[in-house]
Image (cartoon, rainbow, N blue to C red; front, side, top):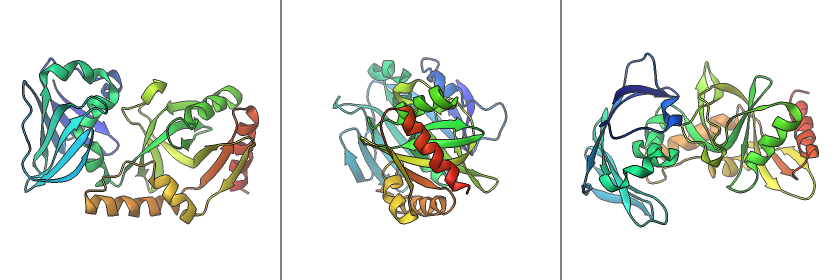
Length: 284
């Protein structure tokens, strides 16, 4: 395969052997036109290389190295104890990825395949951030339900579909970026267990931080209160100081332009009505 893709404002070329088949959701970001600014070369090997450089971050599923050429990563899957790929930046516009031959079967999972490319490193330079959320379209605007896993993001999005005729664009992630100076929710090739993944860009109406409760209550958060909640759900490479600082600057800009609400909610139509009233009050 030798094909051009575009995610947000990032246009890149992917070159890989025919035995590698990107997941269907990733293929939704194939670009019909556009000039590639970055190239990823994938090869398959019986043995992964060991990157050079200083270890700057380490966790069970990832080891990050820094050297003169840039960043390298050994990438694994939580709970397996094994790495399935090695990512190496070899030039300002090129990265080489080596896949373990016996791990190719796992690449059909969206997060496993997408993790190969360190996309958040390229996208932060495009003033974009990846938010863990259920991305919903309602009356031409995007509403993003965000919270830690198992809090009920998909549940609330489904309630809005049922009672207000909204539409889920992605059940697990959204790329936040600007179009014509306005913060916009954009597609992302990972959708979690929701299986809902669309490549669409919609202006953001509001972000809704969720928590479970016995009664429904919605309030608009000040930027100071919203910042740590939003930060906790955005992909941030804390080991890279410049990217980390820039991400915090982007969050600050975002909070100055987009309302963030906190919805304490039940699983009910009343939760929908409660949030609907709060959204209407934003326009009052």
